[in-house]
Image 1 (cartoon, helix red, strand yellow):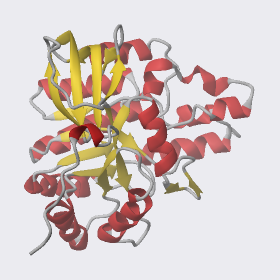
Image 2 (cartoon, rainbow, N blue to C red):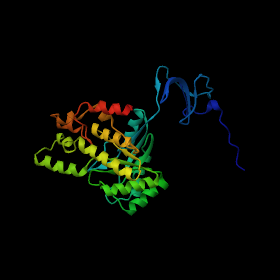
Image 3 (tube, rainbow, N blue to C red):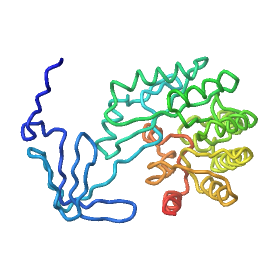
Image 4 (tube, rainbow, N blue to C red):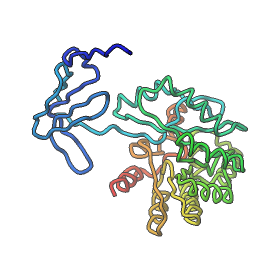
Length: 325
């Protein structure tokens, strides 16, 4: 018979796992109220409007009078410790999630992108190895689909049923893009799995031809980036992805919508009955593509991303207005 467990008196228990936030202005989607919040073991146990909370002795207290309490943010699109085009992203899972916590983001969703010839399952485990011992906040994973065959389908089902992956990303640009027929098949299977499709929407074939033309003209600097993939190239791909997804009734999420035309294509598709969603970036809301013409290469190069920032200076406010809707 095992010895009885001796209960530690409540006033001697560690206060590290118990926290009272007093008099903060709690911000929710339906309004703002001034309440006390009691948290234990990282879980909100009680919110008291009348400030009559009964809490254990030794609880750590923070006076939040005059301050806002916001729900933790979720960043659904990060690339930490990501190997791409011969380099690795500057932030690993420790640095990236440490920064996220400092800014009020309490969960990220990163992307498992398999290397050429690597299975989805092996790539998933590789990312878990990179992340598990480093992350400072909650995290989840999307899985990228960079080729299409029966093996990929089988592994998608395993990722869904065994590992809880329910979002799959396809590319319409870059060397590992899927063609329209493959997108159709992938969307159809994603719907069958009860998952959601994510798409990087740019017309990769036209970008390649534009790049050839620009290189022939000797345009090799950052200014050529937006020229090779102008706004209509993004909008066309957004529309095409929405049309394909609608054929098989697959829910669709367009990542990093960066232009007026792309946002409008998304709204038109939704008005036609498609189940589509879009995300944009802070960069698209805070700056524009005028920096690509800056005389300093390093300054201009710091603004390169895909799809690119747009030269129209009214784009940030336009996208912000759509976010308000």
